[in-house]
Image (tube, rainbow, N blue to C red; front, top):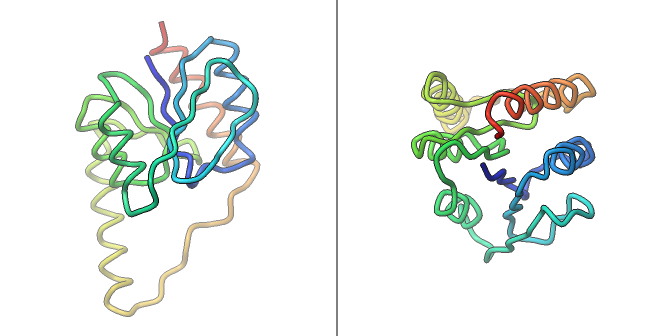
Length: 149
């Protein structure tokens, strides 16, 4: 299994949590972004910087991902593309996207986008909290314990 990180929107608070898991499991990790992002010092982590532009990093991740890989992203349309390729996506708040739940999340995201596009003001996401970081760490550890061999 390879771990991919959609680096453009990755939360800094989660970097040490992720790096500890990578090092503990000797997990091959690829960070894809359109600017320089670093998780920390690790031989297990490689970085790919793509050209700026809509979905360039997403497209690179989709091209590279294989069955049962894990992608860390908060991008629901990217998560849908990943799950379609028989892989998994985990968002920075600890939500694991899989074939059983991704269409629901995508439909909700699209509905909210339509509402915003119609001119209705909606609330943005809640601020990222320590509880979110804890949920991410728990879900990541649970997923890796179950899927990483």
